[in-house]
Image 1 (tube, rainbow, N blue to C red):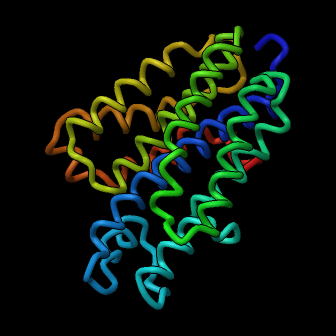
Image 2 (cartoon, rainbow, N blue to C red; image 1 turned 30 degrees about the vertical axis):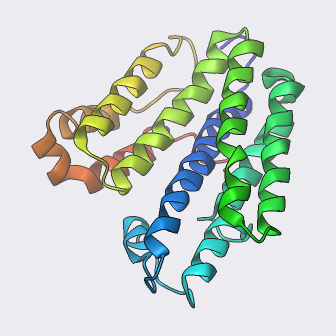
Length: 233
């Protein structure tokens, strides 16, 4: 693996996962704003996707908790904080410029939590995260470093898309992207994926019918694809 330690590899992987989790969560919650107009507890479908109980008093309580509660592992704020924590350790690998976009996202999310118009205040976040990924591509010259981050990114997106019951055509594209990233892993790296669970994914995501029948198993297989990637979460 050259100079990349297993610990740093794990942090790179989770940097990708948590940044994507934050991004996709923000977008998914943004769509909830429209559903909540004039409808009480309109977010139950979202909770069902993740097997979460309805512990919220109303729509506003749900949105604010899932956006801003850093103590909730299911919130956007929690994911962003974990991404930033990993980014701090990886500053030399990803560059200070890239890390600054995560700080900008944190500042923007904090201001949104204090705003009277939360939805409007959240709008810059999508561009900030796109800028983060652009900076990653601009400043990282080591293909292995970049690839581990993007493996985490694509795996997380695929996991969330399956949980949120995205159409097979979209899920299939993300799986193809994940496969391409996995195929770029250098042969000598100790940061290896499980061929057993990858084979399960290939079987489950082969057709739309298999996808509909085996979505839960696909989620489980994704969770075990990198057995070593559990220490620095």
